[in-house]
Image 1 (cartoon, one colour):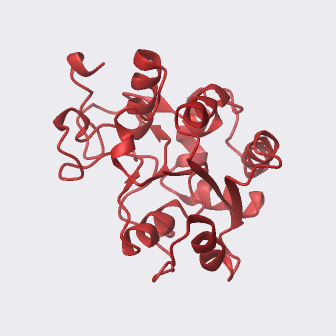
Image 2: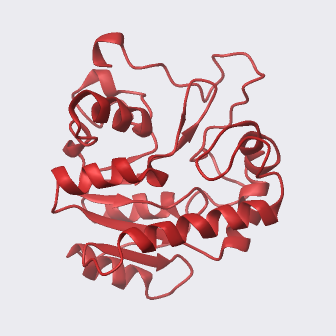
Amino acid sequence: MIINLGLPKTGTTTLSRALRRAGLSTADWKVRAGQTDDAAMHGAFVGEILYTDYFATGDPLARLKVFDGITEMNALSPRGNYWPQTDWALIDAMRTHHPETRFILSWRDPARTAGSMMRWKAMGTRRLPRHQVPGLPKGWGGTETELARWIDGHQRFCAAIFAGSDRFLAYDIEDREAPARIGAFIGRALPWWGVSNSNPEADEAAVPDTDPTEEAGTADEVPPLPREAR
């Protein structure tokens, strides 16, 4: 299992596409119909599934282990606000229940990432400041300086909890050697590497483009998990 702890706009969609081209199945912020036979997961946020299974069984990957990798875990919408990659308890539970799991942190310069977030479907200008996000309380995140400080903190958090571990790889998405480093880390060469979901002509955001003040049922709204699956 390959778990990416990267934040939005750090090449998560590129990583997902690269792993799929290498023959691996990935869940990228939500589970699509056809990716699994478990209909209860179709259309559900990856973060929601992780938390549902963690509190039900102690194992966040109880159902998502059918995938070879998770390339982005967060989601932000009127229905849910999930940032598992910032939660030590969930990360530790993954390591405890699945010690063979390999963790990756896709990252880039915090200032550049913050600038990208500010331009990405009102993520920085509107959506993040209106929500409580771990390390970024409601009311903060509306400037590139605030976002960059939050991003830097997350990157240092991941480095600290995996210090000395051979099951962790942090890579700069702008490093030309990144594909080779990832391939060596997971034991499988990546036949493709490029840029996906870039500004400004991206088709679907890693954080859905919805606003809590808008009506429910917008194109990016995801149906909730059935009650029996909670």
